[in-house]
Length: 420
Image (cartoon, rainbow, N blue to C red):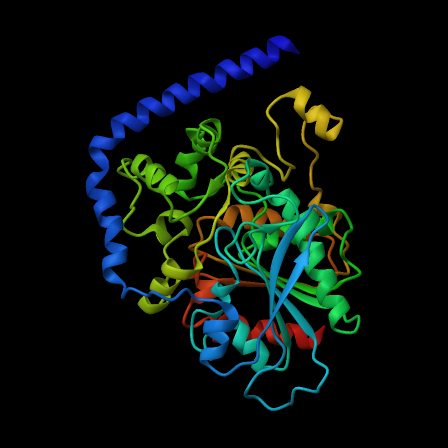
């Protein structure tokens, strides 16, 4: 055991030395790409007022909006927004409406659902379509940085991965919505990381009593064949592990740590840092410039370095497992077994109504990995409770902020809700 620990430690130090060498050698070649990256700010009109679901986005268009807080079992105090009804489409505020919970992806928050006009943004479309719409904001995002005993300056505050989002944040949100809507089961919509956590919960037969149906936009679970060169390069050189080793715990996508990371990665000639959307998640077909600017200026949010390590582990390895602590001893301490437990996605109950969408240009939820997930889920699932929508031209962000998503994705999604 001691020998294994020493070998693992030495291997990490060797990789860290490699990282340092690559870092230093890339600096001289990366300034041109970084200056191109900086042009993002020059292309967008500066905005001095931060976007928020209620105070800026909903209020701007006259929608009612409520602020709620939810406390998780491990002490995180999270923000939950609500648009209880719409302003068009008929109906009134006293009607009982089916609740829908929107759960954002990695390194964004719930404002990402409202970056366009009421005719373009999923949150507004659902409210106008007769639903009671709730917006989750995970731990670490700007509106969910409180804790019963910790602050974001404490390293322990950032000691979590998506394992904890599935175990604590997600059930806290769903239970709150369920309790505040008269015990109605909730339609769930997740994008990217928001799909992974509901799949993890379902695989352990959790939350089924709270969820009426689940929509998975760009589901990510299996990542070993991802086409994202940026994600692959960061994984290969143990980038997240290196920054964790240096003492960083928070990853802010527009902060100084990110600048150092991009300084390294953009030295690779195969990485186009001028268009980060494409470099990370694939070439989106259908984004308005104004929406992209709003996204960069207002939607990007922090996550934990530990969470990025967990995502890197998923790229390196097949299967969907809990966080790997890097040694048999540590894994035994946390899991009582030498390797992290698998989330067995084939055990998800077959009666759960599910609507899955994926795009042909998505680098994160790439086609081979998504088809692997679909084979796992569809093989035994009740055919009446499983629908799949494939959009060949779409990449990762198109499903949330694409200008034609209302027609291609949201319309069939609402029809799915109406059938379930």
